[in-house]
Image (cartoon, rainbow over all chains, first blue to last red):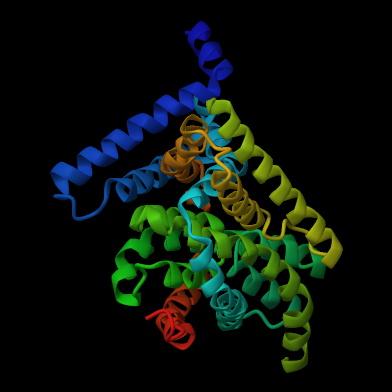
Length: 252
Length: 122
């Protein structure tokens, strides 16, 4: 048994390839035979991944889902930001520069609007829940942008660690909700071309949510959505602790 | 050779991410600003440039295509390593603040699409 455990830990990345293959296969089987192809296999696989992460988290009490189980520790490498970003960049191969240039301005507007709407929405909800100081409200509002903007803003404004934890949780909820809801909402908001995908990426901000949500909807749209979404975290980290915080302080 | 494609992709990734790091430092932000986006633009432009001069073999292209097909598996691994427990257990504030702004953003998309659609494309 110990030999096996050590072996799996030592070969973590390879174990992760096998594990993801199994999850994907199950996802495609469920999609085909249980759901009659109504929900694409990729979407079911991503959802299965989230379910696996939930039960792993309950079991281990850790924060990294299945990767906290030592034999699956390689999953945090395969699913970490390095491989994720590398794979996202590679999808740009099929993208058209013409389309990107035509939609560039719309994407930039979406970036600013998305950050603003998320911050305002998150802040108003924080006020409803009884927060009255600008620091805490701004930190939670920033968490509604992405789970990186929240703690960066909280640290810059010296918010309490409890509020910072809450802002991270808010960002994680957002990322998961964007992942799950995108394929269902896509037909209603016209998310089926490069133009709307670039706007969607800017509006939604969360790179992980956008990249997973588009993967579940239509992989052709991934490069366009990801391109704008990857600027959103920087935009949030720039605006939230500075301009947005100062405006919020004036209002209160 | 396949490695040429992978290496080319890696070079675009490194250049883009580094640019994102330096841009962040320059404007005083504690996060990478658009590194992946820059890397994607580099890849598109450089691939286009070299392709026109027949620098790119089909074999080398396979090295890039492989990774774009690994995209969904990587995302599945990412979702399996998310902190789903904290998202579900952190109470109503995190859930409301995580979900309601998303709906507000969804609602803005069709509007923005309409406003920015230039007639020349149609």
